[in-house]
Image (tube, rainbow, N blue to C red):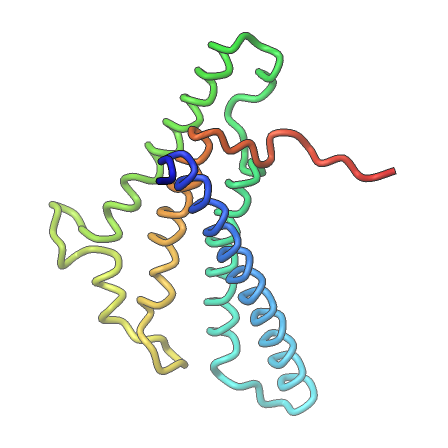
Length: 177
């Protein structure tokens, strides 16, 4: 039976691979749609109405899911740097502060994805988006908004992996000679 540590580390690696595919797909889609819009606007003088909206949604997905990749690799802005040579207790304390800041920021955002003011489920972020249609595309904006809680859950898994011993991004990778 696999240990909890290996399960968390494996889940973090798997989610990072999925995030890489989703982010790359969103960036390619964004680029193709923007190029289509530019060609349609300046060559044919008739850009499709949906290109700007689709590019915006692809940018949202690329940014939010790409943020999980940055967090996994520790490319996120660091609150406490320079403790690599400090005593172990200082390093653990700095990591605890970093983790606490992440949780203080993301737990309320995650909560309000599902409930609104006064803990009213009907006023939650996702439920409100489920009733809103995209302006130029035939789908609900909940498919765009769902990227927020997905991003938060993936970051929580990566945070757990850090505490389980994931050292991805701790030391810069040296280029071969």
